[in-house]
Length: 281
Ligand code: ACO
Ligand code: ZN
Image 1: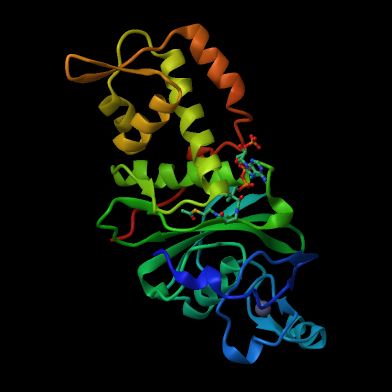
Image 2: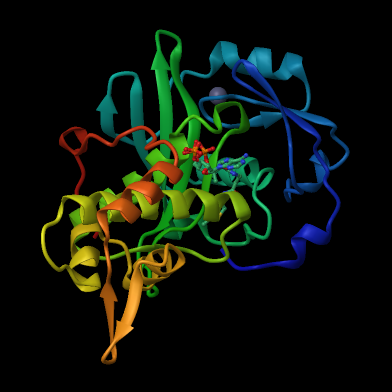
């Protein structure tokens, strides 16, 4: 989403309750004015409706019959499920998700039509229902080949590999579409770190296994990562030389191993055989 001067506004809501967590917020989010004087908001973890008072939430929970996000479950592996929510078909849910997400996203604006987006909501499921751990949004049609608009792992779930899972998932969707993709800019610091880690690991894994020369275009075809992002990643790892007007990858196995060790953990794997999805038309 577009850069915006919103970050200059003061933070309004300091805490939220969501499922079994109370979470401190990070940034301003443009909730409707009647919520502006609220210190804490209470969210229904399933439909994402939010309320000013705990008793309202308790009353709501007795009659809310959702136990997972609305929309289609397109992936299930073990206790992890991914739901695809169409912003046009589930407008209120999508708007609530945006309000919630903005509390943790800087320099992203929400004055966008949720109709134009799909939301991929990742859940940990148990006998009480499917609990959202994070999500990413994706434009239904992107002129700029964006395959992800906003990504969030809710703070209690951060640093466990879900971010890399969401990123990997966005590229699996691009592969199914037969397109290359890239995240919408600007990236936050944490966003850039996560993407850098993902790109590095995916590219190094291929370079390690591959015998003989491989071009950047071929890497892009295999991974659905945009050529520019591949070039930048390999350049920052000093694996690119410029010879006779061409970029050449120089992949010394020892250098690759050193970089792979530094690239951190692989994160949770996306099991592509468990993804049942057809591209949006
Ligand atoms: N400090 C240092 N490095 C970090 C941190 C941190 N707090 N958090 C993540 N990283 C880096 C690490 O390299 C980590 O890999 P490692 O754990 O193997 O070392 C890597 O990022 C990814 O870690 P994950 O556990 O897979 O990612 P996580 O589930 O924490 O989600 C995300 C990452 C989505 C960026 C999360 O931090 C978040 O939601 N932040 C707030 C919202 C945000 O900034 N979103 C991106 C905006 S840009 C955009 O939307 C296009
Ligand atoms: Zn509800």
